[in-house]
Length: 607
Ligand code: AGP
Image 1 (cartoon, helix red, strand yellow):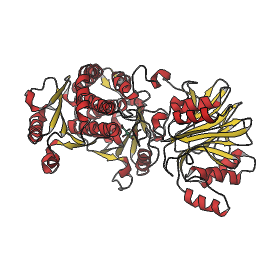
Image 2: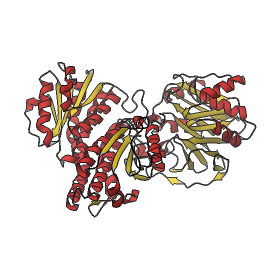
Image 3: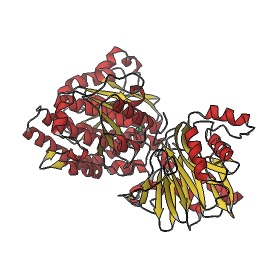
Image 4: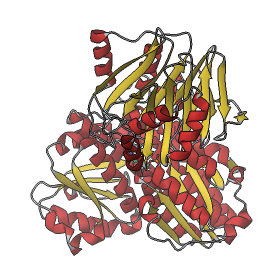
């Protein structure tokens, strides 16, 4: 989704804006632009394409020189990617950059047209610029406050007024925005990595709040223009965490960071060898009283919830529904008091997940957010919160965030099962001991399977389509494997419950079609092997992922990827590693942009 930045300070503003936008590239974008005050006049440079195209354009046409400005990377929603539709957008005195959607822009545009305002782009953003300009009588704050009342939707805006060349304004409703503070300089940004090269200090800005950045510092106002004070935050990770650190891509770096991410996430939640989630306000008594559990999330986070469902139901015997957040809201879910709704989100800003959470609260359920991004909207608005400690995840394809989401799912399931009296203390202690072994086993897996996954990647590049199959936890996991492959290699794939193949899908199998079979669950192994034989005998090229102790004939599959063995219930945390690597090496072999796959954005802040 779009990224916005802004700067007031002593450095060269164009350089700061472009550099900060580079750190937001992971969000996905198709055009870029900046607006900078040069000799008290606003100078705009913008283009369709990447930041490198913007820099090339500025080399050719001249870079704006100044110390105050705003910048943007656009992920098209209203109007195709083009130079004209790129931000910043100007209406008379006012220039803006915008992330989000102005829902009532058509109605506002009609009203403005009736007042003879002319538009040059197809964007909803230009409407905001024109609206601000229409009502501007010399007081920026008053104008922003008035326009804020008129627009509906979600947005984060960076705004400059032609006659206030030393000031940047920012306004936030729903879409993410932070205000960075360095020595004699201030920043606005959609996310912390944008400012980390300059400062680790920042303010969180709430819905409908306005920030005014000038050479005197930053001031905050509520929607009625009352000044407000805020607590300064400090990022607990630095530039290294947001850089590639010698790896060719963020994705492979993040895959390799998984052992450390798991440790950071689980160790503070283990006390005397037992799970301890009391920091998030969960008590054993509250856990005992929950009747139903609903897990609501999108994409990879939803897949972590699928594994969570299997584990919670198996150990705690509590029914769990897993819902796709974008469906949840519109199907009148049967939830209410006594239910727990768990929202899982890496970014904490996913619009669908956020609105599902708000609906759950409205219906009387308790909400628990499992979130990676500190201070994000979902983290702030949930009743209870567990932070995952993956550190910044930059690659669009989520890997380490999934791993730590799984870690929390296990901790939660263990604690719930214990509270419900479904497992004994010694059983719980054993699960925790096993969980503590996972980081080392993930590291071992990483060091053992690279060659096989690279080979699998080179085999898959010619495939048009493939299947992932598994049973039980392996099925839940294979959904994530399939999504990973699809999103970065652009090869169609589906994950299927292996037992369901015979009910239709097996008709797709033709000579050479790849099938990735995950078989880590002993009790289901025999059945899985039968399914593998069924597809193999119809010509499938089978890649089998199983544990090192699994005894199968060498001819059962074309390739066998063996992973270390650990307590069976925890096997998804190891088995996901080869699936992530297969996706990575396939995308790499195809020459795709691994970290920034086409059409995708890291943080999906619109519904
Ligand atoms: C995963 O690789 C995807 N990028 C995507 O499915 C993602 O998990 C989903 O959009 C949810 O994002 P969130 O965790 O930030 O809410």
